[in-house]
Image (cartoon, rainbow, N blue to C red; front, side, top):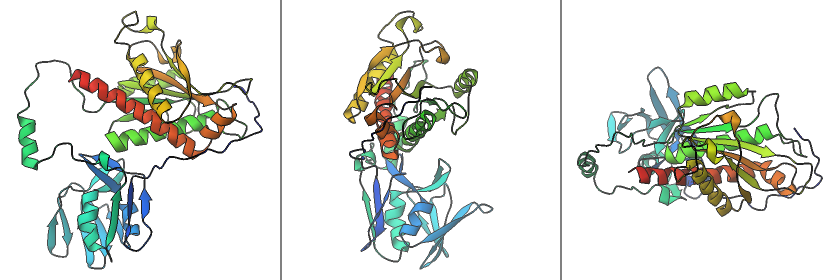
Length: 357
């Protein structure tokens, strides 16, 4: 790959506020939480992260499969899937039970506000900075929602409707293949993995979408291995991430690539060319986030095979351009890129689901 030295760096002007929830004891500075997952219209946070902020501690007992919380009132016990909190001989019903999400035991915001607030040493401050994400989309009692679900008319269609679209992300390069290298030493393989993991996290946290990464660490994969991994993923959408380099320091901006029209399964460009639709949606979300998009191009994506699987290769910028490198080489810039890509994927998926329904 091309190595090019750039002598100037421009600091990233502003990092987007990524915090979603603020929690703390009254009278103390609240702590911000970005790792917030959404399930059934409610925010969920890792209990191990929340307890120290409230002056509490806890531990997981793997043999008993319960979680103990040490409080001023005694030891409280909860368990994944259980609708009760036990404190001594007293059982308190829980509206939403704790559950394991993405490998960690997480509790709902209701649990924090109604139960942990009563166990802490003082009044608890809780603020959701993104309340639109946690509004219940189906108001009414649980029984009302159950009957509404049972009374939905059956569909005679044989086409399966997925409640969660399976997303595959292919971070380019890895291992002994660093890809492009910027003046500050940042490697393309590092940038692609960081952004891929950022998109993965957003998809899991905010939409509970199953996500598959062709690689999840710094190791090399041949083309054949990437294709084999993708074939096993059973994905319904593929995002390929790269960054570029140039002999000139002038080229900059993102470029989105899709397959040529003749490579679409139908044999010609049509309204069913979802790769182009995905690319256009991603372009809109990237530009809305203030990221420069040079354009959408059709080019052979031979390493990815042929077919009509919605696929976009994203060249996230030039590591040989001052602005692009400054953006891609810092966590704030990578995070902004991940957030914009998530918004584009989410918009595309929601639009497709509405069309199916």
